[in-house]
Length: 237
Image (cartoon, rainbow, N blue to C red; front, side, top):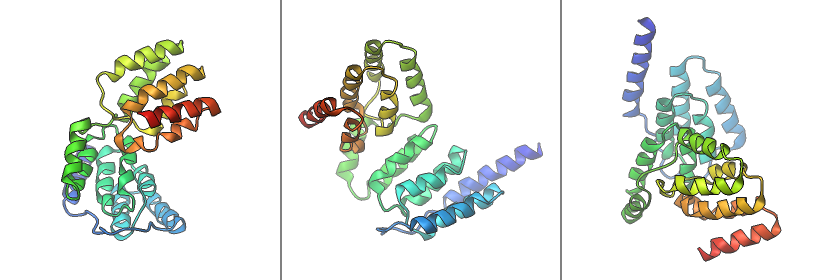
């Protein structure tokens, strides 16, 4: 009973804290240096009490400008989605590269709450952009759990051609909601380059809109001729 009350009290603390702790940095252009960031990250890791650990993480983003990559490292220090969500929300204003903030989504078992928060923040800057975005992929991102299920379904097929048949069926219920890293991970399940290339062409229509401009990174995974074919496909589509 005592453990239950302690856990409940901490949850109440998180909920209340979330209303008062959002970072004040709004004009960040330069991230904390790697040396200082690592020092502050180490300090957070040394906190043995969860409440102190959370407060240190929130203080870091409230007082410093951070890159999305740095924010992701801080979030990874926490295991619960509730704490991770609070840290992510608090750090948003301190981010120097808000256009990359979507890269944090895959640290959550379900990223809808963070996605909606980010979209609500973006709406203050571009109502038109938000409207187009909500129509195009309906506030959705493939969660880590959901992605693992898709991965296991593909792994269950030993023949590459059948993998592509299966992914086409799976994708029918999804909008563009896969990250570059997720697509790269699925690519590694293929044995033959030709089917892998076909897979990447299929996935091009399902990559996150913000990741589409970086799809050339997928092409770098191929040998010269396959790489050129994929780059031409990207240019034509």
